[in-house]
Each structure stands twice: as structure tokens, then as C-alpha cells.
Amino acid sequence: MEDVLEVYARPYDPGFPVLCMDESSIQLIGEVQEPIPAVPGQPVLVDDEYVRKGVANIFVEVEPLGGKREVKITERRTQIDWAHFIQEMLEERYADATKVVLIMDNLNTHSVASLYLAFSPDKARKLANRLEIHYTPKHGSWLNIAEIELSALKRQCLSVRIDCIEKMRIKIMAWNCDRNNRQTKVDWQFKAVDARIRLKRLYPKL
Image 1 (tube, rainbow, N blue to C red):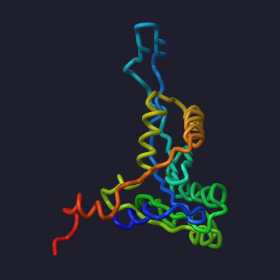
Image 2 (cartoon, rainbow, N blue to C red):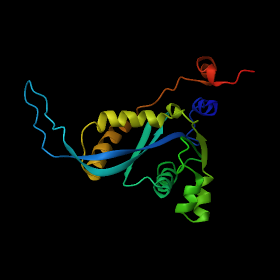
Image 3 (spheres, helix red, strand yellow):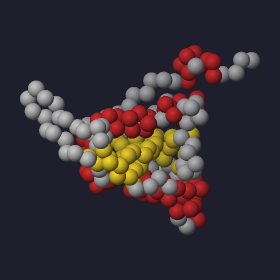
Image 4 (cartoon, rainbow, N blue to C red):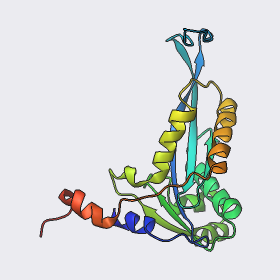
């Protein structure tokens, strides 16, 4: 926990940007009966019955101090999908960075091994050398700012039924552009000294 909190306390450095990433599955849901549009004095009427259309995966990347985020929708959440998301992060969005400081949970796909599964050894090593990885502790996913961003995305953009992955991509792209245009930053205030006071039950008693 303190390792992650110390990373958040670092000053902004474009050469070593601090990024957070998270991912989540979301159900694609279609309507059995078309909703009845809202009219004055009457909200939109949606039938309780629905049909499942499969599952999509959402990758979210956030740079708290830079006010930037990237959201990608994939059909699966495999090691290969994660590796390609990291490749795009390093070679496209942060190509000028010396090293990306990456905070994420320790899901089994979130490892350097996934890079070697997706790319040649030379390329995988090159990508891995540009990563400084910090994992959130077990039961400590609340420390991941990308999880907070993912929660905001679901509330603001995915609270209605969406029946296909292309419609989801269009909605999320508009949301992503709006957030980036407003340069919504995260001012993280919880520090290691606060953790030692408020979460002292988690520390060993000597």
C-alpha cells in the first residue's frame, strides 16, 4: 500500500509519467420490447425483459496528473489483449516517455509474461524495459485511480442498455474525448502518513 501511495506523491514528470490501468467486463444487453420515449410528465418506459448479447471488455488507462485517459473496448480479456493495450500505451500515447510508471492490480494477465506471449523476445524486452510496475495490494483495489475512473465511466456512459460492441465504442469515444478536452485531473490526497493513522489495524503490532 505505501509503495503505491509513495508513487502518487511523486511530482509530475513527463519523462516518467505515472499511469493507472484497470479493466472490467460489461454485459451487452438488447431490448425485447423497444422502450417508449419520454413525454412531458412521463419518463422513458423500459421493459424489464432483456436479451443477452455477449460480453465486452473495457481497458482504462489514466494519467492522474496529466488529466488524460484512454479507454479501449475489446471482445476478450486475454493476455494478448492486455499486451497490445500496453504496446499502444508505450509506442503511441507515451512514445516520448523514458519510462512509464504503471499502477494496476495483480490480475494474472497483468504481467511482463503477457508481453512475451504476444511479441518476439526482443520486442517484449524492449517494452518491459520501459515499464516500472507497481501492484496494488490484495483487497486494495481502491488505491487504483483507474478503478475510480472506470466507475465514473459506467455511471455516466454505460448506465443504459447497449446491445453491440460498436455502439459501445461510439458512446465511450465521445465520453473519453470530453473528459480529455476538459483535462479532468485527479488530486490524490491520501498519503502514507495518513494510512499509518487511519489504517493502523493493517500494520503489525511490535
